[in-house]
Image (cartoon, rainbow, N blue to C red; front, side):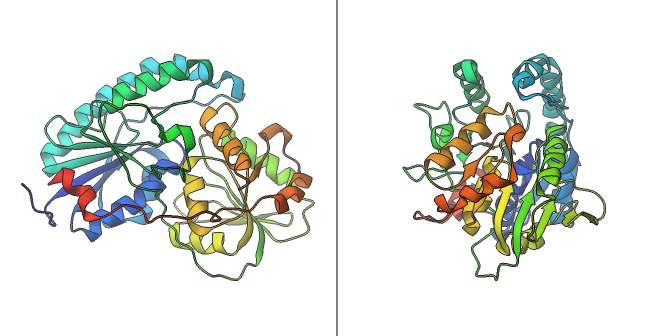
Length: 356
């Protein structure tokens, strides 16, 4: 049995699909550091760039991009994704080879893959992290869930960032009748925590997700919020070399924020407008925010989560094409996050026993 220490390297590899997979790996990386492991980070695109900025002293490796292209119209997303399957499978095969090279070169003792199918090794313990044990895809949900379960079965454990009881945030997404791999519910993963901060921002817009939908929503919200009388700040979710601040009418816009600055800004905001991605929901739950969601068109998961938050009385939502500023007047009907009991995230040392 291995003893945890500075020489026990764990490879952490998030999927590059927006920034959500990367940001929910941040508390995992910090927990590994606290437990004297040495994280090595791997990925591609903006999600890897974000982790480089958050952890500049760690070692990084570039993995092949799945190069997933998004449809400009939500109803065509599933068809477009279907035709990209061969390209994705080639990237996964290449990824497996690179992972094996990293494992051998760095003497890696374990792998944590956040939805990267090829980030695993037959030689060392490999953990798959996902909140989607049940993959919603409309009429093909049974098939996509079956395929995802087959992927999960190739890993030693599956970590689900959710509560495993009636207080579940992800609802049916994080539940399954059976799983071929040991499942551990580790609690919602957020880099943020609740604080008592004076609110001086009326609306904070936090954009995320792949193009072109991220840019489409940005333009839509700028148009709608131009007539807003209060203080409005937009974080565009575009990770670049340097942070840039600009003005669009009364809206202050910044291309990206790192965790510490974004956490403070979220606490200062009376209302957060964002996608209904699961990582965003975990962050908003952690800081007990009031929110309004605009799910990504064609993403069944985000549409389900937005409807779930509305049904629970937590937050309202609008379809992207139908969003109007006056819809925010309904917010008094919703209690916001943090009205129910919460549990601590289970990032105890015992979670990492799989690597020992």
